[in-house]
Length: 69
Length: 325
Image (cartoon, rainbow over all chains, first blue to last red; front, top):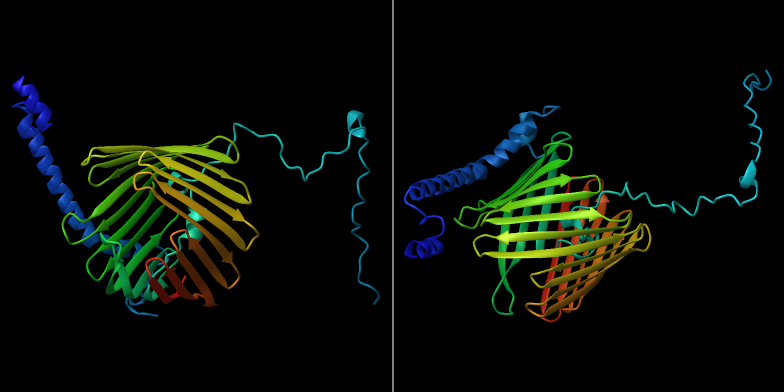
C-alpha cells in the first residue's frame, strides 16, 4: 500500500529500485543535451544560414556580404 | 510593286456545321455561365492549413502596428539568399497587471539572414540584446513538411521552441506539434465540400496538466470567407471577410472569452491599390487604427501606422521606411 501511494505521488522516479537510476540518468542526459543544443542553435544558426547562402548558386562574393550597397 | 499580300496561304475555310442529332436539336443549348453544377465529391480541393483558417481576416484586421521609427533594409545577394538590417526606435508596451499601459522606450538593431529555396526555408533574426528568432521550414517529402519556430534568449528559462510536422493529403491536412514546456498538439482539417472545410485540434500542456480541444469551420467562395472557431478554453471566434471588388475587402471579427466574460468585435477595411495598401479598423474597445504602406519607388516603401485607444487614452503613431523587396 505504501509503495503504491509513493509511486503515485512521485511518478516515474519512485517506481522501483532498478528503474530509478536509469530514469534519472536519461532525464539528466536529455536535459544536458537540450542545454547544449540550445547554445549551439543560439550561436550557430545565423552563421549556418550565411554559410548555406554563400554556397548557393550563383555564388555571391564576400564583399557583397559586408558592403551596404 | 503592288500589294505584298500573298494569297498563297488561304485561311482555312470554317468547317461545315455539324448536323444536329436527336434530342440536342430540341433542348436549348447548355450555357457556360451556369458553371459546374455537379460536384465531384472525390476530388475536393485541399483546405488551408488549420492555423491559417482565419488568414484573410487576420491580414486585414491585424496589421503590425508600431510606435516610433522603423527602418528596414533588405539586401539580396542572390535569388535565394538575402540579408536584412532593421532599426527600431520607439516605445514598446510592457504587459502590466493594472489597466494602465506601461510604455518602455526601446531601440534595437536587428540583423537577419534569409535563405529561401523551394524545399528549404531558413529565416533568422538576431537583436542587439542577444535574442534570436529562428524559423525553419523543410519539405521532407512531397507531402510531409517540418517547421521549426524558436525564440532563444540569453536569460535562462525564457526560450521557446516549437516543432511542427505537417502532412498534406489529397483533401485534408494534419499537423502534429511538439513544444517546450512539454506542449503537445495536433490538428486536422478536412474539406467536406468545394467550399466548406471542417477541422479540429487538441493540445496538452505537460507541466500544468492542462488539455484542450477545439473545432473550426471555414466556408469560402470567391467573394467571401466565413470562419468560426470554438475551443474548450472558452473562446469563441467568428470572422467574415467580403471581397467587395479586386481592390477592396471588408472584414469583421468577433471574439468571446467565456472565462473572462470578454467580448471584442472589430470591423475593418483593406484597400489594395496600385501604389499603396491601406488598412483601417475600428474596435468595440474604443480603438481605431490605420496602417498605410505606400510604394514610393521600386523597392522603397513608406509606412505610417496609427492606433488611437480612446478608452485608455493611449495614442500611438509610427512611421517608417522599407528598402528592398
